[in-house]
Amino acid sequence: MKAELVHSKDIDRARWDDLVSNSIQGSVYLESGFLDALLPGKWQGIIVCDDDGNMLALMPLFLGSKLGMKHALQPMITKYWGVAFKDAIYTNTYKEYSWKKKYLEAIINVIPKNLVSFSYNFHPEFDYPLPFYWKGYSLQTRFTYYLDTDLKSTDELFKNYGSSLKTNIRHAQKNGISIIEEHTAENLFEILPFSSKSNETIISPKYYPWFKAVFEYGHPAGKCCSYTALDNNKKPIASSFILQDMKTIYVHSLFIHRDFRLSGASGLLMHHIITMAAEKHLKVDLTGSMIEPVE
Image (cartoon, rainbow, N blue to C red; front, side, top):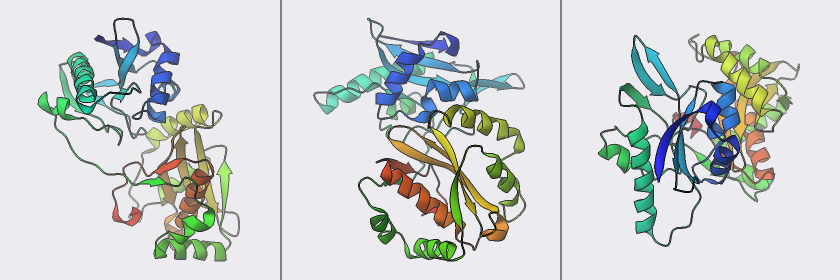
C-alpha cells in the first residue's frame, strides 16, 4: 500500500469518480468534473492504492501561496473536501479503524510539510479524525442540518415543519409568490448585492466566475440548479444555488432581497427544495449552516 500526490492531469478520472460515488464520504464536491470546473489544471489528489493499483482512499489538494508562504485551503464554493474511503465491508470495528488509520497515516505523510495552514471541512460521514489530531492538526467541530425526506409526501413534510415556516409558506402563497427553476445563476447574482441588511458584501463579485463555472458544469449533468422566487409581478426576489449527487441535495446558498424579507419567499423556496428532494428520494444538507434562523 502506498500514497502518492498526483497532479489532476495524471489522475484516472473514471477510477477517482467511481470511488467518490460509492464512498459514504463522497460528494459532488469531490467529483473530478466539479474540481476541473472550479480549479482547471490547478488541483491535485492524494491517492492511496494497494499493491495491485486499486484505489483505497483519496483526498483533493489545492495549494496556494501568499508572500511566499504555502497553504492548503479548500475553495470557498466547496463545502466538503477531505478524505473519502473506498466502500468496503469490515468484519469488525477493530479492522475497520485499523485500515482507516493506515490510509490516513499514508495520506498525512504525503501532505506537503511546508504549509503554513491547512483548513478543510470534512464530510459529515467522516468519523475518524484522530490520526490528524495525533499528527498535530487542530480539530474544530462544525454542525450541519441533514434532513431525511425519503418516502414523505408534500402533506407529511408540511405537517412536520415548524410553525414559523408554515406561516411563511402560507404567507408567500397568499401573496402570489411562485418558484421557478433557472437555467443560469444570473438572478442569484442580481439579488446578492441587495441581500444583506447592513449593505455588507456577503460574497465578493470576484467569486462569481467560480459559481458560473460550476453551474455550467453541473447544470447539463443534473448536478446543479438554481431555484428563484418571483413576486406577483414576476420580479425575482430570492434565489438559491443548489448542488446534488446521487445521495444528497446540498443547499449551498439561498439569498433574499432585503426589501422582501417579510414576504415568506425564502420559506417557500426551502419548501420547494425539500419537496423536490423527497420526490427524488434524496437527503437535504444545509451545508454547515449554523445560524439560529436556519434551525
